[in-house]
Length: 335
Image (tube, rainbow, N blue to C red; front, side, top):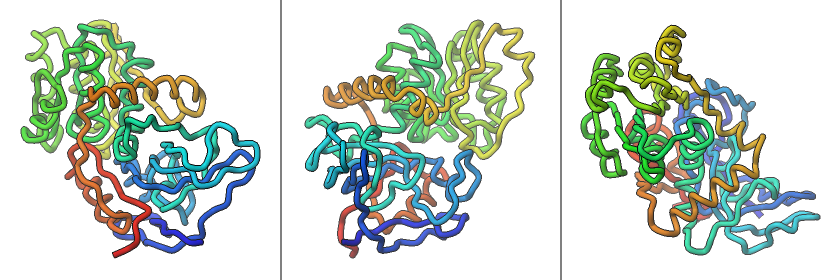
């Protein structure tokens, strides 16, 4: 039996990806095969296929780090799930295909009141935001949270999670239109720092919106020119979260800044956290799924495209044209 897979046969641009027929895998001991219905795409997928991410698989491989679907086969010794269970999971890559072969201990059963589309849309972005704000920053109700890149997938999730945790959320984005999108996700105040990441705009805006005090926590998946401004806009005893570098630039920030502010620069590597503490991730995900089931999440799905449209989808991500989450629909016949 064959299925389809989006294949990165050589490192490069989204347009270099190919759609290929591949054999449906069979599970070994401790493994399961999941028929995928939805694949969640993230900005880091564009970096992995270009060979510029910290995770650098050798071609050929499939992009896509999160999925939702139905278990169709289980290997010897698997008792945690069975065929017919709806599940979601994440891998570093390899999920943009009709069927995935994964370890059984890396899948999570999706509650009946959460759809596959919801699960694929929230798994990585919301788990990253929750881990960053709860485990890494220790965000407390009543604190001020500034989110950069607030209209993107992980940024909009951070706005939503911060709001649910009781923070006052200030959302920054590259354009006024994208900042307004963040307001719809629960941001109390918004600002725009310009397409070039103008440091002056970002620092001045955060300072003005906090009465000069600065933000208790800054969530930064953008990096680049705006990062130094964000570090300078952190409050006394604040926390600056290094989440990613969507701008393409890795900033060099002087350590004198956290010294005089008594602040912390905190790395957020969610993938490694999951590998090291799967039990904690499962607890985080239960909270996120509970919020989803109660209708409390404001997650926005930018679009759902068929698997064969993967190159176009990743191009939109690479060019910064996505607001919210972009999904691929797998398991459909081509056409």
